[in-house]
Structures are given as structure tokens and as C-alpha cells.
Image (cartoon, rainbow, N blue to C red; front, side, top):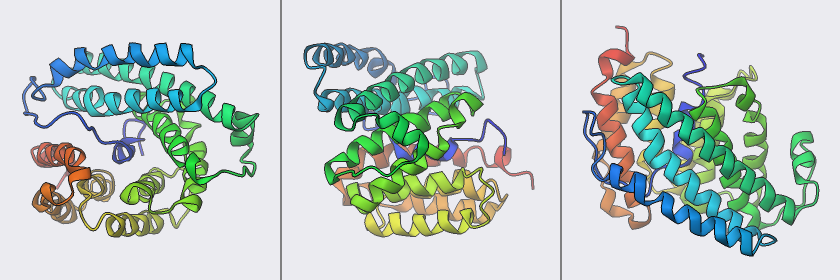
Length: 285
């Protein structure tokens, strides 16, 4: 697996809540340019809240969530598409995303350190921590900022070391609340195993098992997991028929059936349509 491929599957962890349309040309997503300049203004508000309430973990959580969603939903989506038509612009978007993901990671490390003394050391050593159910969002968004750093850096070894930390965070979260947010943890674990570099012979099987768990938890309405499995699994296997089957399923799911997932599903559907235009590039035969 090449560095550029590492972390692609982690896109399923966070899918944009902002945008509702895109095109295949350089004007990539309707409204993206407006959001690109408007949304960062809210970051100043988060910074102010952190400064005024620096011992409150919740303000770090809210800031991290905002940064991560923006980075995935706008910057990374633009970077992924521009990579094939304007490499240097894409590189700038990846760089900006990486900076925001690292800031988000820092916020979440601070938040969890406020909740658990010496948290970072415990995480690095994979020690047992008596987490509580209300820690799940903290564990999830920290794992997301780490996954984003891997993806935005195009698999830089400096950030790849967080793969084991992501797995540890998600495993702890799943113990607490397996079906949290309609299977978001299962979907994230699917991505972990799709990107597993440990040599575990069962990684593929486990990824597919987590796909099934995520699908059931979302009642079949999580389009993102189908897109991720197509992009990361079917492409790596060079299984064109399975890829098309998954993309077709993604495109036929009715996004109006689950209002909570509607915006995320819109972006997933748009990515599915974009991937469909790249079939000849993705498959060699």
C-alpha cells in the first residue's frame, strides 16, 4: 500500500455537514468557496471560548469538532479532486488541512488530559483507563483528528504512528457505546482495519465485519461506508464489479430516509458520483 493510499478510508470517519453539491470541474463544490472563507470566522469564537474557559474540556471538544468537520468536508474534498487537475493547489489544501487537524488533535489531547491526568502517556503506552460513556465523543473526535492528519499528510510516517492510537481510542469507545451515533464507531473501525499495517491476516475479515455492523446500526442508510468500501477495498482488490455494485448501492440509497444523516449522505453521494467518473483510472483492466 502506497503512502498516498494510506488514510483514504478514514474519510468515512468524518463526512462533511456543510456542502450539498459539487461538479467535476475546477469549481469543485457549489458553495464551497463561500464556506471556505465564512466558516473559519467561527474558529475565532472557539478560540475565545477556550481562552475564557480553558479548564472546561467541552470547549476544546466543540472547537475540535468544528475544525475537523471543516477540514474533511471542504478542504480535503477540494484537495482530493484538485489532485488530478491542479497538483500545486491540491498540495496547498492538504497543507492547510493538516495544520487544522493538528490543531484539532492538540485541542482533544488537552481536553482528555483535563479529564484524565497523564492521558497522553497512558494512550502511548496503551494503559487501561477507566473511561465513562460521556467520553465517547472525545475519543471519537481525537481519533478523527489523527486520521485526518494521516490523510492530509499523504501518509507521512510522522503521523502514521497514530494508527495504533486511533485503534486504541476507538476500541475503548466501542466498549462504552457500540452503536453510538448510528454506528459511527463501527464505520471508523472498518477504516482502521482497511488501513491496518500490522500484518494481521484477519484485517480484511474484520473490516468487512465492521462494515456489516455499521450498516445494521444505520439501518442501511449510511452511504459513506459503501463509498469507503468501494474506494479502499474494491479498488485495492482491483474488483471492478464489486466497486460498481457498491457505488450503485450508494447512489440508490434515499438520503431523505434519515434526516440526521442527510447532509453527510449528500456529500457521500457526490463522492460516489465523482469516483464513478474515474473508473478507468482506478482499474487497470
